[in-house]
Image (cartoon, rainbow, N blue to C red):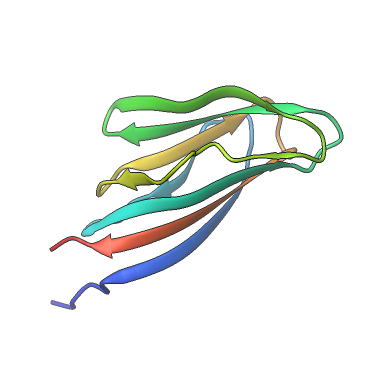
Length: 111
């Protein structure tokens, strides 16, 4: 069996749509830490988003219906967020193609 890499740094980018989509899922054998999250409005009108933590069938909103003005940005996390194996970050917006998400992550192999 191949040994898992101890630490993997990742950057994930997502164009936000009106459909709830999974931006990231912690892979099997890893605990992930969301180091940074940033949402930018690249559209010509304001738009809002909802970002959530998903564990199995439980969804917990990190932030709900947060408006991002035109040509502005918002960081939805004040600190780090730990994701256990199979936990996900989901996101949806009030409009498609106006908001973009970037996540900076550290995946650490479970012992």
